[in-house]
Image (cartoon, rainbow, N blue to C red; front, side):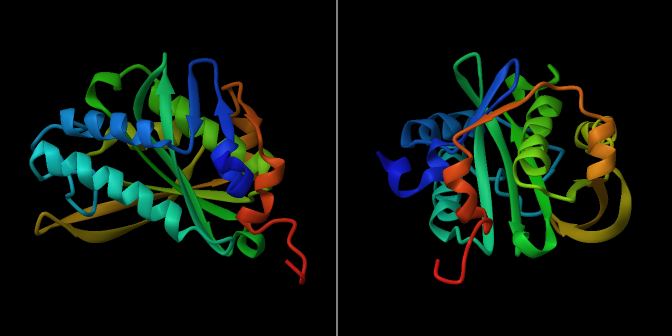
Length: 219
């Protein structure tokens, strides 16, 4: 099994409604279909790189290639785990969590997207809560960061609901226009005060060296 060689493939994070896991090839095919069907309205652009401004077939291909690239580039010092979100047996979107030098900094960043047909049901909050539990409870994180562009109220609302605090503003170019990026930071203490979603994690222990944890000088 692939998890014998790359244990993160066997990691599972579950909430009452969702399962989050690294994608199989079949999951990636389904994820491409979800992205091609639409993530946001045409006038919106929640991503710094407007990869959704392509024909549906290219959107699907870019999702597959991007996720494969993240898996291929994974190192203990610089990892990004793009988990597919599965709701009632259907792939609904992506929840990622990543870090550089996590063993030293103990800080993660997150990002996500959902297919439009899955939006408005509280899934975004539940899937973010899932990876926050993994980061804080499972990996011992001390803080988590998130960013939402001005106008992306859904993402900002998830951050506020889960206890994040404002952490500055910057300006980025999106579709050739200046857009404010609103940054949020969640401390371990604030996470503990806002834990409302039950989360279980399985298959974590053999993955720890892949997050830079439990390594020795001989590893």
